[in-house]
Image 1 (cartoon, rainbow, N blue to C red):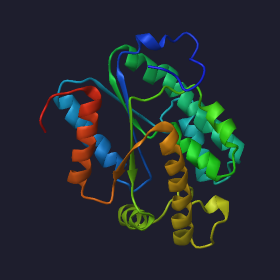
Image 2 (cartoon, one colour):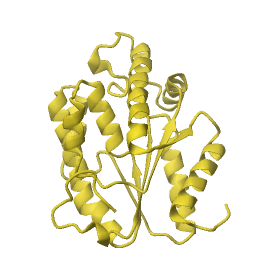
Image 3 (cartoon, rainbow, N blue to C red):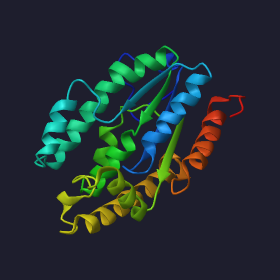
Image 4 (spheres, rainbow, N blue to C red):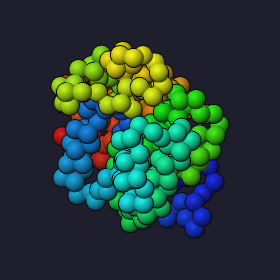
Length: 230
């Protein structure tokens, strides 16, 4: 494996014998469902799995959640909170699991964080430098779902839209539905730009759960050079 920037001190990439697989996608893209299906698919075939994701660090996750609830985070503070959360998980969970030969399934990774920061005005070069500590995944899958579908799915699940996922802090619109659509389009534009740089495999998430899962399983199977039917 290799790092995007300078290697983490004390970590020899050659010792990381596991696999890192990332699934990206907005809230409502079906990402959580597909992560569960993928974990079951891999565990059924005897693989040891570790799940990681955003805001799961014991170091800052509670503080970050509390700050988000107050809708008072400044942009740089928010970026550094998330970067700290990521770095802590990388050092204490992801790297040890990869050394032990686990398959690490990341429910979103640095790409969501970078897209959010850039949409909010952060300098792209600064953002990329901030996450230069990240390991390059073996596979990145991006579930692309139309903003209209995302609205329907989020409202059906939660009966509301999230303040941050709607970009309400950006002043795009006073109407949360309109703001959500505009914000998600901005995020998708960033992912389209990053796709060329980072080589995402884009999956049409507007389809049925079964169809999406089948495509993901095929891509993962090819990445892991597995020979199993599903």
